[in-house]
Length: 113
Length: 114
Image: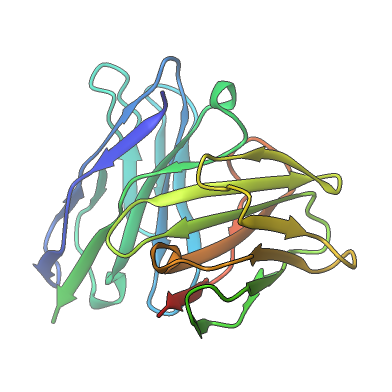
């Protein structure tokens, strides 16, 4: 089937540290891949996406590259800020499995000043 | 920027009671969804709705669940007889297309069944 696994949290970093949140997918085919972010008290917001192998999605200093060979879509940011503290969800979409996003469990990121 | 609005933000109900979770999707969106997240677990798909009918549902969406778009603006999720394990955060979403992107999510309703 279509599934997503992401690293468990919480991840606690100091401001300006480098961030990596791992995400791998399992699918028969090539899904579209997404990172969503949920800030406290808000809904899920699309952060970035990639629709085919080797695509790089980027937004707000975050980036992730669609790696077919490792079935991964790791989220990275070179220098995190306190305002990046949130829950990050990796998700995939493959029409063959229906019109629905498949999410990982979410990773809590806490950034300390 | 257009928003998906969910009410209430938090609902506490007794086991066996019926609850209705409400959502107002974005007005020009055509596809509507409910997802839920049990604390510490994955965000799970429940149901999708298009053209006034359910287009897809998951195994979780059993006979205790129903959805409705009663008036062309609201999109509701009803749980007929709540169980303790229904306690979760419920997210509504809408989209213009069925391509996986362009989803707009609401901020969720936290349902606590006691």
